[in-house]
Length: 167
Image 1: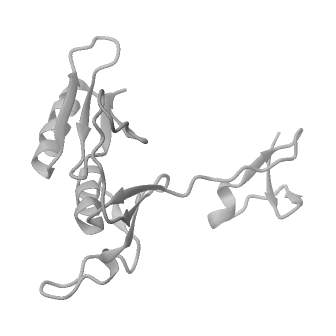
Image 2 (image 1 turned 60 degrees about the horizontal axis):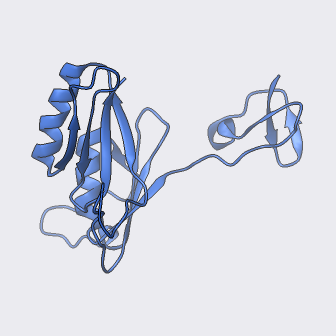
């Protein structure tokens, strides 16, 4: 039986908002943390946030939107958050002074993590391929003709690998 908890109390009624995702299984009475967001290091938080905002249709967290034309980008200097309008996973971008590009699949700089995304059909894979390239992605591997698992691997403008699968 599924249950929801707040603090050390089990609740049988649904919780709203942030508490909704914190659930437990009745027989072990243990809750689990919920992943809030994946944070990507970058030397330019606004540039990378814009890339993923356009690629995935995400929205800025209130207050993180780009400034009006000609205004300084004080919010985009060190940390930005994008949210999924449908709920679920979010991305954040943290400024660092230097970033060594991953040399995936070989080389001295391994990928630290990568993002996987899916589209429903091979035709959608091709459409998103063109979009990713137009937004500044770099194609690293093309397995779009793989009958079992068609996919393409890219590097974002900061060099982080990400994949688009059919599935």
